Length: 220
Length: 383
Image (cartoon, rainbow over all chains, first blue to last red; front, side, top):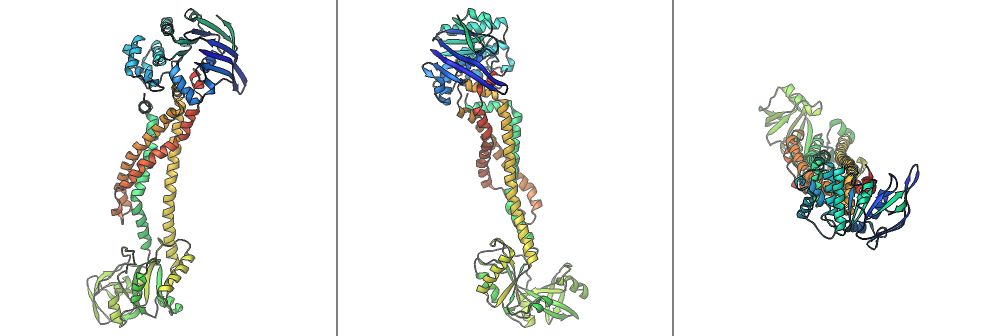
């Protein structure tokens, strides 16, 4: 269960304050597939990073699995994230000098349970990357990079996957593949929060929220 | 992935950054090692060169008339030869390279010459030193340049001096001083010729700077106090120009070493620190990813500090090798007199293994803290 209580985030810039989130309150149930939609600058990524324990809100509480994420220490939050949350980014964010397996294993030793190369390879097989295991990110297509990033997020079977525009840089065929993998993950009990400006993601999500100027405009 | 695996992979990826950092430390360690390997030789060479300027202390009988002394160049009075042994036997004195001398002006072959009898150097108690002045075997003489020119005598010839036969062991080169009219012989030979057995009129010595600290004025006061306690019937003269030159040169050499090593270390640390800062900037996204997958501050810092320690360890080994090679290859050409003192110092290697990684880690401490404290959300949101 994820609960946001009147969460606001203000970015202080030289040109003045930017209110990215404005007293957002939201409940996301375990096993839900939530799509967060909205135009650029509406606060989607800020919301996602706040839920992921990566961005401390200016005010309000973010409670994930009964833990108030910003009431605990930075190191406790890092440990919590290592075990419970997987991130997928629009720009893939793979480490350029590691191959596919190594990128997936980046987080393998962090947290309570360790995962080995066999776990990574099995996951990569499922994501149809068996013939790209020892390639560097620069040798992979955009779709393959995103699936690698997805494998990294899923390796430790976290309860929550946070995906920030994961289909933003992909062609329609790869968009569908990625979304299908996320649905499969969700059907196995995982909570997925997907940020996107694509309308088609609504078809895969169990709920959709629309953000505009830091406010939730609609909840479907 | 372990921290070591990540460090290793990153080094392979960013070879230039690694190579430049390594180069900085290797250069510093090499210079440090070559300086220290040649250090003892350099120190001794400076001491020897300064020592070769000549004696800077003259101990003469107390009742010497100084006007007469400066006119003739030696004292008319004598003191027992045993004074030199007595002085040498006292530990902790600031006198070194003691040599007993008996000098007299004599007319020889229609020439006014100075006959100088010199004893072999008497080592000071507890301080065995290489002799700084030549010693002459009994029965032999060294003759000054002008004496040889006027008499036509050459090395290997024999000559009669006031009734005794001597072999000319050496003709001294032109000195441009009264040494050109000197005839040097063994002290006991001169004492016998002059009928002044067991008597000397001067002890030449070197003021030992290794014991003394402070100004020349302080030195002469202390030397006089020391002498008063041992030889109350003698007095000491300090040849200030030589003493000051020696002191300045010794301190200059010491100060140079004290400056150059910290300077090099600071430059090297700044170099590594700047490269580490560039590295941190380059790796902002990577750090963001690692944060996102749950890496804590300790693990992030370990990536940078671990790399620095690795650079330090490699540089210590490579730098020690290069530094030692440089010292052995070029040291003997620079320090010709004390060349045999240049040997590999394994103790320095152990110090390098400790100090180089430590300095590298210190150099990247600030960049590592920047990496730890940077906001991962900002880096990951950059398109």
